[in-house]
Image (cartoon, rainbow, N blue to C red; front, top):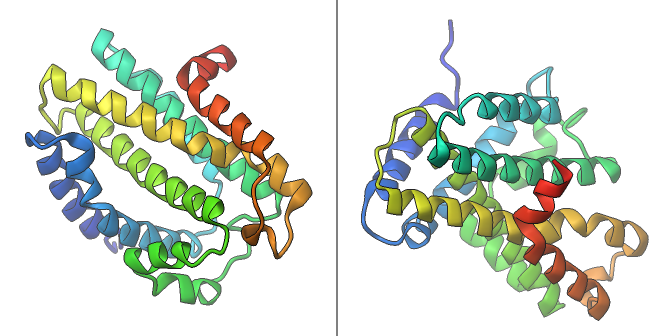
Length: 232
């Protein structure tokens, strides 16, 4: 039986992440230093995913959500589980938004992704900096950072729930804050699909973003977890 191609790189990354998690440096600062490595791992995961017959990401995320519900065994875990579920819901909404544009993993071949798979994190950030519209460039950078922080928060949360990481209550509080803030910053990404669906064109990134839309995204981000609980 062949070993999963992501097992070794994921194990190596989780080892580094848990060291940062159990350390004393501020959690956001400590984990931000791992963005490049997580970005590379993300691309490897995408490369593997497009070779699989079952690419039902929404179904997989729904399964993870159900698993999390069974791990809320005490007050501290319940709060962590709530924040992790909030983050998962944001990921689900982003996938739904992409699928509304007709973008899904179905039918994608590895050769289609070849240029993307060669990218390094710093190259992606540099590419964002070349976007003519500075507002759009900042939005892209914010989404990228928020998505990586969200993924790291979910991995650290999983380590706590599975007993693989031992941290203080203060550190757990930092993890909850990281998860909430990262997810709130990704909210404009998932809420922007209706706007983009009606206005998208080749010159979008070179044009100013409507002030009303920007204000709306700020309000949505500030609503955050409380708004999500109302929908749950």
